[in-house]
Image (tube, rainbow over all chains, first blue to last red; front, top):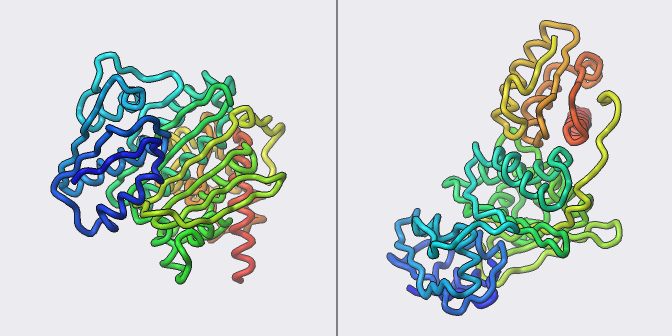
Length: 291
Length: 98
């Protein structure tokens, strides 16, 4: 089976092909080839989704191949520099491949190690670019750790990846984190039935809504993410899962949630966030702690 | 009695780390009148950590007793805010259920 990757590659553009070729992953082909001949540009979500999908297919015993890898094309170079091919083929395509200063290479999420990666790799790299000291990024680190904890709680096979890109002109950071797990609509359906996938995702971001999948889950993580990325950092959040998506942004001082149906099928959950880094800095509290 | 979170766990990221802190904290609160929890060297705490290290104390002590007997030191803005939020909301939920 051949899957041709789109010209402008965001994850969403592959969902239709995923649904066409794999349905909801009931039956998989023995071999699949991702054809890169048309790809000209890709966003962090494309890097993360293709990586997760490749790992998931391999995990299920499907032989994954990549074709038409022309290392003279900028999109292929970008993916090579993001360490995609090193992770999936065992070595980079080009000897000249190297990590770009504006990106953090693709990172597989391991529940026990990823929190330290945030503190000792991602945040110092971001701090060097945006000038905000790492100690003032506690909220950002917590947001990302909350997502990692959700992945650890809801993904049996631990198939998750993260990729970050810094846009120096806009002073924006874009991070995409995704897993191939149960997906939010399936998790929400244990508690509330009859919702569309996008309604289920929107509900998962409400303060205090918990799937109660673990006794320690109290429905805080996704709300905390929204509170900080959207309200405090004036950024945009997108969450996609199964057949639904929700975009969350700020209009004036109000948080706007726009649910929508995705074309195709998103296996697992994907969270994209983009925000201005100058708003990460917030003065610390003075004086002793008070309840 | 001072409990250093950093001496017990590498960070305040996971529920498993919260459980370790809870075991120590609950035992000390049962044995001593006042307990200080020191967050020096801890950058942040997640809701999973707060939900396992602190929220279950409400099963054994009233929120007023916790406020009176538990001293928090070395906590930055994020840690303070997460602790206050988690404890006050769970206490309110418990009061509603009672």
